Image (cartoon, rainbow, N blue to C red; front, side):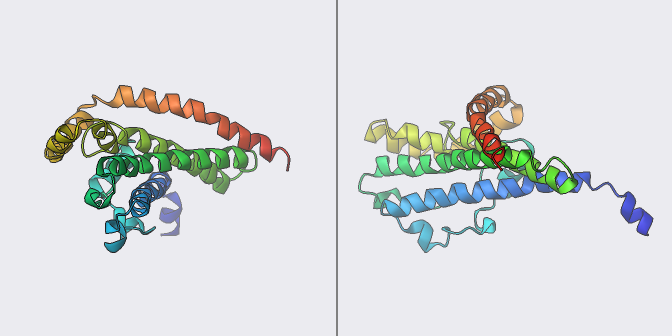
Length: 223
């Protein structure tokens, strides 16, 4: 029995955890950013429904989680927002929508810095490998999440930003068809139509942010 235990291939489990934990971090902070921003702008819906929480279960969507963990693109359970409570509904909705992707970019910046800082110290040993791999994967997934959510297809955040530039009549007319956007989104994701464009966009932004990892590496040389 001991030999069987030792001979088990744990790489699949550890690789799954190295994706699952970053996904939970990214979706939780993304949704909290939406809810907290809405609260600051006058909408207490997310707080009243218990969604201003760092508990990832509150924001968990099984299909979005699977997609984000294995495809790099996905979604969380949306935080409830009542735009009627904003002084300027369209502007408030746009700012609230942008808060999520902005939070993910900030997460990517922080984790890239930590990756650069710990890379030199953590090359030896399995724990060190998992540490730096987890940090880099969190940055990558978070950035992918940000770019994906900026696509202007409802119900993604980018659509709410785009709608804010439209006339009031057009805005509310398009909002009525928001639920059909998810069907289009599924078609685009599962057909692979978005893979090339999104991959290039994420790689481009990632390359620009890599300077943060280099900064962390230079700082680690001082210790």
